[in-house]
Length: 374
Image (cartoon, rainbow, N blue to C red; front, side, top):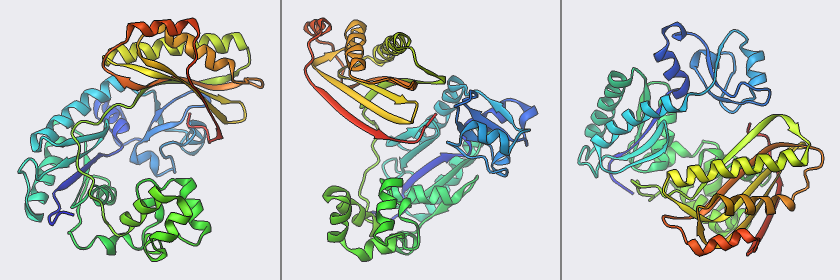
């Protein structure tokens, strides 16, 4: 662990909604909700004015409309948001060569690597200067967390919201983490959180008290070791400038369930073509084709087929996706379809076009139920 709070986490405040408000004076100071506007759409971002009514990210849009009927409801403009994000990321890279973007509106920065900060005072100055620069360049606000580790810096930025800065002094991490919910720790989602709660563990202090052996018994070896280390505030993860793309995928959610098997097949072919265009646009190819089907009852099926090597041929991907669809029962209707490619490489192996003839190398199946993400 570092001895100075030189890891910075930036999280832009209500980014999509704030960008819309900044570009349209008529929306400033008003409740703005950005997301899918169809019957099954979900909220991507809600402005702070909308959050007063209880509207939050990932909420079904229909529920948001009931809570805030007079809000402005807008479809996302990702190209516009990306242009603002590039301006913000440029400001971060002026601070350090080690910038790790997590999304359009969130990133870690290693201030020490850029020789921008070496102690608490210089780190705070860098954070305040960054916030001022973001406001001057974009008209938007961002919240900054500063700490000696990525985990604590992210917790700090959450505490800084909206439009603030929180610095956690090294040596105080355990006291900060102790009373917090287990869900605060990275990797503890709803399922793990519920599993720990049933074992009587609801706070980070209780994770530390349970001990490493008990955590391994409850959640498995790798996860148990990691959770115990994080509960003790041990986080040695470095800021990584280049995050490797692991997969390329596209998916669509339909306003009305699709029952016609032929229509389902045509949608899968269309998604396969879109996926390949995105794959080629990134200069990549891949060897594992994936199909995702969410049915009428919210059960989600995933199928994957691994080829002998990478391809970016649309015919190969279409036919692999069609074969995978053959193994899925769509009786009752389909509400979401997705096609993805993983096992990525930056070259294509022409001999693999023979795969389009129908040779299936490996078929994996996973079936589970999950809530609709929209």
